[in-house]
View 1 (cartoon, rainbow, N blue to C red):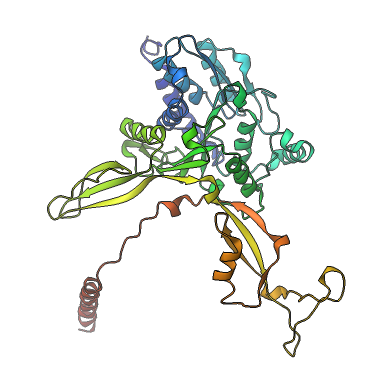
View 2: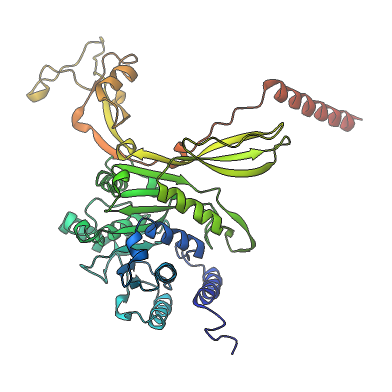
Length: 471
């Protein structure tokens, strides 16, 4: 029988199903957020979850729980179980999940049934408005929530929980804008973390770029980032290659959060730029044109597990063609350049203090003056006798948390506006993670003589063409 489990394993069936779903989604023009997680991305995330937990991989009979609030057909849960069985055949993973789409839910439940799991732990419904695992916590969690999908349909329930329960509920830190609900899933996962006193939790979530920086100081997004960074929950953020998902080519990031950080990671965040870690697929699947190979996954896992800063050395020959790549850990010597060639170094793994992503948005006021240029003073209350601010001259500045506010003001503002002052009552704290800025490598422009020679050549060609036209 061609379709027997002995001949076609779960992984192959999963891939076949995902290809069918992708085709149907294209026909029915489903939401941009309805996408499926490539197997190699799940494998990377599972590696990152387990790499620091030797006891899970070594103790016979160990039992751990894992949860996916956007379970789809159960791919993330299945690959996590495969990983554990491969490294610890006596280990056991109890799987829980929730899924909105009824077809995906049915397939996930069937897969769990085949695996001998308790299918009562797989719930159908909207995770945000109707938590199917209320009050439960887990050892590990994985999620790939919809990218950039609005949450208007569940806005009333979510806002009600935020207002009524605050930090006792799931959405205490803040609410993102209605146009993108992915950070709601992040907060949902935070509420499901097994407490540190009971062994703690680590989870991985795939997000697009906007949760890193969208929203200024005091906004919902910034307050959520502030919460996870000030609570020291972010272990690492890994940039994936573009064109990795079946129906979107946008940049994506894996966030790894934990309430059981090893001592070396305390107060730190590791950023890894794995956007160049890909190989071209033999055949594209919709928008998916790239995949991460085993070596790429192993390299990222090693960088995360070792918690080191590193650079990527690209070796170029005399003609500028790439001949080799090598990861150079901080303190190591980069490879030597071949004759006439060169070695380009680019940051690959960087480690920052949590505080380095924080800033204060200060309001800089300038005095209001009358037509004669005299200061306008307040007439009553606290403002009596004080210069009044001119709202048309009001400005804001972002000052890094690590920098002294008065020193910054004296250096950056006072020389240009000696009469300015800070309205401290309007100061707001914000957090953003400008990922690309930390990995930007300045490429010096070509020599001027070279550019001039190119321009002369192009000009001569245009003149020749004009002469021909005139003739």
